Amino acid sequence: MVSLLSISFQIAAEHQLGEAIPIQFTVTNETDKDVQFLKWGTPLEGVISNLFAIYCDGTKVAYDGILVKYGNPAPDDYVTLRASESISNEVNLADYYDIHSSGDYQLEIRSDIQDCYTVSQGEDTSPRPLSQHESYKLSKQKVSFKVVGEGTPRETVAGKQRAKEAQIAPQMAKAQPLAMFKASGPQPPLSPNIVGGTSAQQEEMKQVHQAANVYTWGCIQALNAVQSAQNTNYVTWFGSYDASRFSTVKTNYQQILNVLGSQQITYDLTKSGCPSSSTYAYTYKGSRTVYMCNGYFNAPFCGQDSKVGTTIHELSHAVAYTDDNVYGRTSCKNLANTNPAKAIENADSYEYFAETTLPMNYQFDSAARLPNGKTYVTLGNIYIRYSDSNASTIDSGYPLPLQVNWGNLPTAFAEGFDSMSALANGKIYVTKGNQYIRYSDSSASTIDSGYPLAIQGNWGSLPATFNAGFDSMTVLPNGKIYVTKGAQYVRYSDSNASTVDPGYPLQIAGHWGNTPASFNSGFDSMCVLGNNKTYVTSDAEYIRYSDNNASTIDSGYPLQIADNWGYPPDN
Image (cartoon, rainbow, N blue to C red; front, top):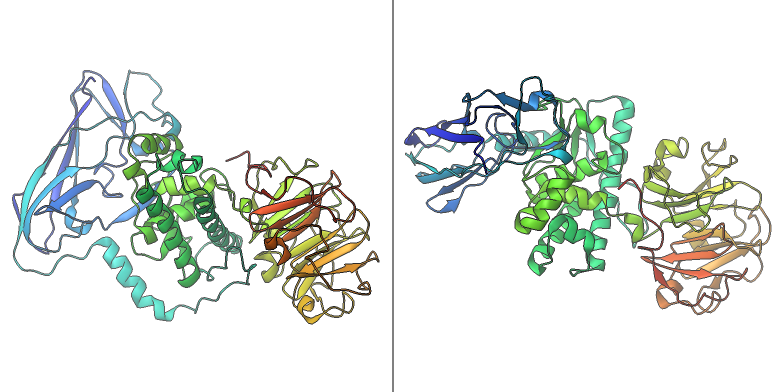
């Protein structure tokens, strides 16, 4: 390879413990042409990622600085060097690395230039998107220095952040658990603390926080479902299957989920401290604060490089101590192929695995075909939509949050539905806990006045367990309404579900065909699709009925939801 750039370091031979340790980094253009390259991952942009591999007497020194998610670069993220020209910048190692003891230190740069190419006079030098980047491998020059004395180690920028959070934690409002979800599915995170932003941005941030919890749960289910090289999504983002690496990835997602459920996360929407216009967000290892930047606010809710994905990216830094080895889908796939050990440490890899995992593959909270002819499936605070009669192709742009898209939902309903169905009276009913709401429009966009109402007293003479909430409901092709709770169900023959039929409740077992044991203990959702077949889900499986009364399960069922209910086309 033709040498385009060379690098050099200048650092004093000896430093006092606790004092600054400045190092000057220089890049020189070794060609007779202009060279344009990306500053990311080099000291030319300051220390915004783990730039150096530093060892003290053979022991690795931990990076303890800012960690950033970037999107496509902006013009000011690039440097153009003329022929034989050099550029330098000085950074202080002691502010970003845990240099807490005297000893002999050795350093080399970790990363390569992420995009680098020669340019001719008059040639377009616009920044290139991540998918077009061409990395340039830097020479791995090692430098040595000593740290002496017995002073107090210098506090790193991340250490200062953690200390600040510890001071303000007692002053913050106590985080409240969100409304309970179904027992077998993702459990609710603690409510977040949100700083700055408009009221609309704050509300969306709450929805993103909850959806990040659902997606993280989905990642764990996806890893549990296929713990081998057959897990193609794992291989795509984390590389060839190895039991130890696989376990590390699963543990990291589990740690994120545990923190979401037990510790309050602060989201700062003020855009303060954002390193550049191409930054999505940043945080620090061990922090519980995520700072959102321009890229985040311009991102879609779900899908590629989304708000939900950005949140998981940053939480992987804060909780699982991941690094930013590469950015972008193309580079992450290459990293998985060439260096799986680095891929399982890379925050974008965790984000992209999450964004390409559909949580609904592992459970439905509710499902229904509405009068507009479309099928809707919910899990936690998000939902997907199908326009085809068999629910085999998810519509573009989904998942989306329930809030706003289903009218001005009461808080508990915005956090997830328990059951929903369009009844024979043409109205749509949604339950959450011991309450329900109703829609008279065909798309469920405007909640009827006077709702929510209590289930008790409005759905006939129900057993107490049903008054506390429904698990699933639907109208079968026989025209009757069925509602389940735990291992029991009730039936209504009137169009408004106001009078429970005599003889109910009955047990699911023995009355819905030869149901598998897991279905006998309860249904998660029921719906009749446009093909006039009845579908019932339990955890990650579903069964199907072709008869009007749902008395005989179709041959070949149960099947897995995954791979049979479509996949978001935008992912």
